Image (cartoon, rainbow, N blue to C red; front, top):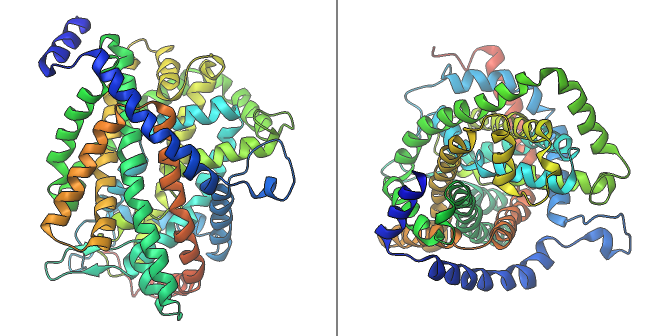
Length: 502
């Protein structure tokens, strides 16, 4: 039956497998040299090897930078990732929502919009990649990266609200572009701030085309073709359909995007996490042994890919790509939240890495390890996760097709907003500017579904991870004022200046 449906699907659009395969090879051939010859040598430059040391694994400068930022912000903010957790729940529930606050979306909508950009194929495919390369021990470092990343997310999203701009129609523009430019100007670094802001905007646009949709379309199509083999080689056709669906949502802007994500994200969580939880409960007697395997793999000198450092790098790299803490992207979505207290939105945002990495990524990893699929040769990305779940529930690969499509769809619509705000920062705000970006964004969905995983994954890593360079520089400079604002905010909570409205 499914072959007949797939055949009608192909005939309707008039594509042939041979033509699609040829197009895929041409597109992949175009991107591969750009990634290997220009981007990798800069973004994944290894400072350890540069100084003549060999520790048995590559140590990309961008991962070192993200780890440094996350650790620094955790200590400088007084472990806000722990002491702000309970208050974050209250904020998301709407306990402190003031209907008179400026903004476009609620705390909950801002959270789900940002989560929809991060909870996605990084959780499904990225976790599988980390474990297949770094072994089960990579899971431990993913969890550590998620906990530390909560502090980075707090700082960047607090600044996103503090330096946002509201136009005469109440529409918000915010994010690293604005706090880099305007925040650093306060410290007599106006020129430097503008350079960092422009660099971030350029990288964010690239990230929106790469990880924001190309990677998503690629893995969504891979899962579909895995279930319907007759569709193999017809990625452009799938990309065209997906582009049309995404286009119908992003035309409406952030309010339209938020209205969709606040419904999709909870549904995705129940659908995917619920199934993972059932498998974990079915293997509850093995949980202790699996965590022992994870911890042993995290610290074993003979761990995969260069020992402990190699496993750590894989864990942090995949976690960074999944939750984007320190990258600055989420602050663009949180800048639209209805609040007059920047710190409150920063506290809401720290929940993202916890939900995305500590909860969802860990559940995915446990299922893969329980089933032993990380030891099966030939499986990569979403296919490994699909086989892991499918080995327990034969029907799950069909469910995963739906889940991956929703993950990809929600990630795309959120990243289209990130890219658009960066585009408008560079080229000005107008209908012509807006629609030119959106058309390009939709075009890259088709490209993403047509290229091989290697080039798409590398290009995605390049653009999104590189955003951390200008962003964390700005966060380090502005962190003192964030800590001051944080102390004032908690004092207001204690003395009753900030009250519950529910």
